[in-house]
Length: 238
Picture 1 (cartoon, helix red, strand yellow):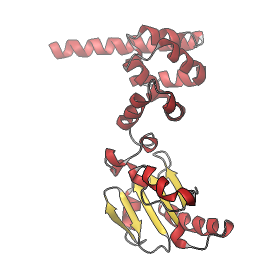
Picture 2 (picture 1 turned 180 degrees about the vertical axis):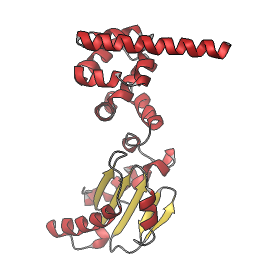
Picture 3 (picture 1 turned 135 degrees about the horizontal axis):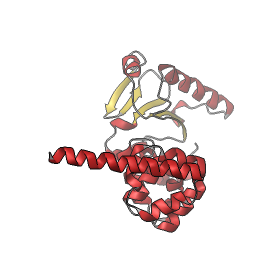
Picture 4 (picture 1 turned 45 degrees about the vertical axis):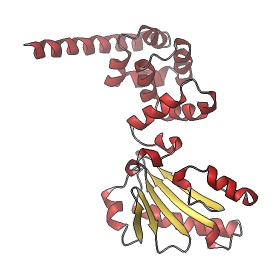
């Protein structure tokens, strides 16, 4: 990513606080919960930056930064950080002292909320994704962020729509965009079933897009879920 040099000062002031160390050129890599950071990735990042500098004829190491943004740090990563020269400069942020250019490692799960942009909260935990969802509802400017959240975490978004009485027209649009197979897969999750129970407009929108056998499966699961809840309630009373 290249920052325009003639607007460098202006761009720096506009960046989220998390990236206030950015320079003219910045190489980023994101590691998700499903694909966690491995020790070798820290070495590969630096190798890639040297290749990037060669390709784009960047000869000043002071002009570039390298950053890996990881969902979390595994025990294997924590064990090798000292040997690779990474030291903590603040909670959730490490810097490599052995690198010729500025190299950072950011652990999303360890960052305090005030230091993490919404774009990275999408890759964090369900509570932070809920914050993003609520901040995006009804805001046209944040639709791309809502689309990213929807594409990556369909089941969670469906649950949030039910919990916060998302408008029926938008629920139908969401169901159509997901398709029958993805909706059926999402509804196999127990927490999704629990969320849609009692929300008539959500249930109607979902049932309309399901095949008969999928609809029967949903109703059976929902019925069992309700029976289990009632039984648990009776047990607590006794």
